[in-house]
Image: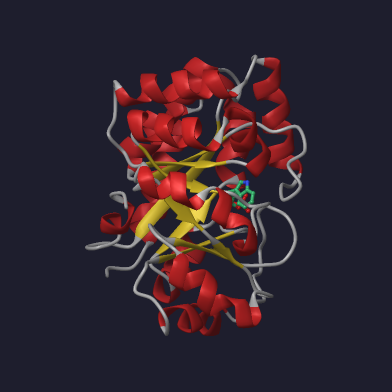
Length: 258
Ligand SMILES: O=P(O)(O)OC[C@@H](O)[C@@H](O)c1c[nH]c2ccccc12
């Protein structure tokens, strides 16, 4: 087990997502440092993927920019090594399973441990398929952060019980992207999780405003923002760092006290 669970001990957590290599690898290092300086408690690094089925247009386009910058898995590992020269902010990877499979489960988890990547969020790995990867993740102390969605229903208990690190609560059905309204009864979803585990919960999908952070922070232990951050990067390119720092600061400040 990694250091992730502890992040949530004293405060509500702000988790920020970026795509590795968007718009280039040096810029992503600056962006991660800026998010951490602004107050992000965990940075989720997306590995660019050719078929990101859970992603909306904003993140798909970021993946394309990253591929244009030459993204591949080894470059992402080099990026993390460069990040680690500048910040110890907890990191997780957001990646589709095929990229880990291709690299090799053992080698990938070993690399995460070596570089200080605490966990993996794998949107296309159902609970029922985790057994192949889990032994390697355990052995290297890398958390497998599961996603629980509004339709997880009677699978919630078993998914939550097997979780380490934190649980990614998906706010809405569909794909990533900012939303003005979240319809799901997240209070009820989170209490079903809390009934079976004390692993922290963080809500993502559609979150972008400080008001949402304030409200969702009452429901869960943290919030996750992707597309709103990626939009700032699309707008400001390799000069986005100050905007990201300011945004992270606003979101972190909006979260309620624990
Ligand atoms: O973009 P949003 O709506 O803020 O959602 C978070 C999200 O981007 C990030 O956690 C993420 C990026 N790609 C994903 C794929 C599946 C689940 C989650 C993700």
